[in-house]
Structure formats: C-alpha cells, structure tokens
Length: 272
Image 1 (cartoon, one colour):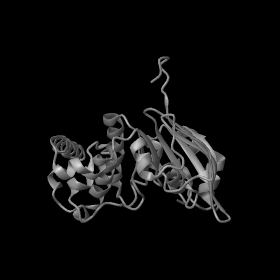
Image 2 (cartoon, one colour):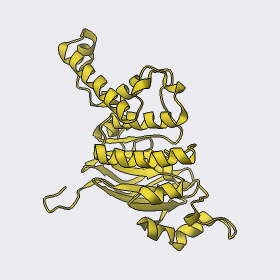
Image 3 (tube, rainbow, N blue to C red):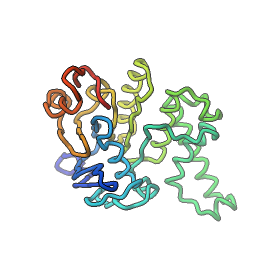
Image 4 (cartoon, rainbow, N blue to C red):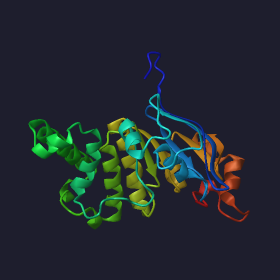
C-alpha cells in the first residue's frame, strides 16, 4: 500500500510475446496485479493461458516484453529464481512427489527460503537444525490450514484427488509467495468440491494476504470469486474487466460460442 492509500503493483506484465515456430502462442500480452488482487485469466482451449503462466514463471523466456515482480525484472530468470523472488504456481496436471510423504512435499516448498549452507546442513549445525525445525513447523501449520494434518506421513499419491489439489496449493504457499498462480485448480472436481474450493481460495487470499491469478474453465467459479477477468483467444487479449462486463462482452461470447447453437458463457459452459 502506498502512502496515498493506493494499492501498489506487485506484478506488471508489459507486452510479452512468445512464438513456437510459426505459431504465435501469446501476442503482446499485458497485465497488472495490485496487492490483494484476485484476477481470472480465461479463454477457449489453445488460447495461450498456460503459456502465459509458463512465461511468468520462467518455464519459457518471452521473445519480447517485460515482466516485473515488485519492481524487479524477472523475464528470463530460471523458475527457481522467480520462485525465490516471490511467484509460485500450481499446475493443470498435478505435479506432486507421489512417493514422498505429504509433509515432505510441503517442506520442499519451505526450502526456497532456507538460509543454511550445504556444509551446515551436513554438519547439523545448531542454525541448520533450528531452521529445519522451523520449516517443519511451518509445513505442519499449512497442512492444518488445509485439513491435511492427519495425513502428514502418508504418501502423497495415496491422497484423494481433491486433497492432492489442496496439497499442491499448500506446497506453493510454503514458498511464501507474493503472487500465487493457480492453473485450473477445479479441474476434475465435482460440484461439491468446487464449492469448497471457492471458499478455500477466498480463505487463502484473506489469511495469507497473497495476490492470486487464476486460470479456470469453470465459468461459475471464475465469475463468482474473481474481481476482474482477462480474456485471451489465440494468444491475443480480447477483453478485460469485471465479471458482469465480461459475461456480456460480444467478443467473449463469440470466442466461447464457436457455433450459433452452442451454450453461452453465461451458462457456464466454455469451449475450454
């Protein structure tokens, strides 16, 4: 928050583009997130949404444009460097360490903020031992927040699908991010699980004070929790605004309809 009371920008994306051969996956994409924002990024299948996330988190390097996180330029940095700068993500396809216990999956996230040296860890120095205890305590606190404390010692792969989604968010939060990118967190969930996820995302934002950018195909979820929404199609931004404006935007409706006899965006059915 600035001295004038205006929320400060935490993420600024300026005209980034990415091509793969002759395919322009993302074209001149821009986005600003202020502290405490909960924004949505939507679009039909193949629109470029996950490519945007991969550009933001260092999986891909943009061909052009700039990405700044709390005024530090991060375009071109490696994923671990961007995570340390304060941006974490989940994935459309769950990427947990299935053979490891639930607790260790979250502990791995806390290591992004570790200060111990390799020698100190090997020698079990008092500082190293104390830091490990603190990271374990933080991991257990996060599991408690997500209702997973009773399964801390189970292998992550044995959790029910919905709990695996929770665990992935917990691991991302363990890195103490300023910006959290959620890539289709409701994928594969039933209606009851989606309602619980909606409430969980709100609690995450409130409790941890994190800024959230959400990719999601469930239009009901997006329209319900996002303050503003950006829509892209074929790598190009076609609309940006509050949910009610997006629902009624002709370009958005056209992008999602695909054909005159298909359901509309307002009905919560998307090509994506």
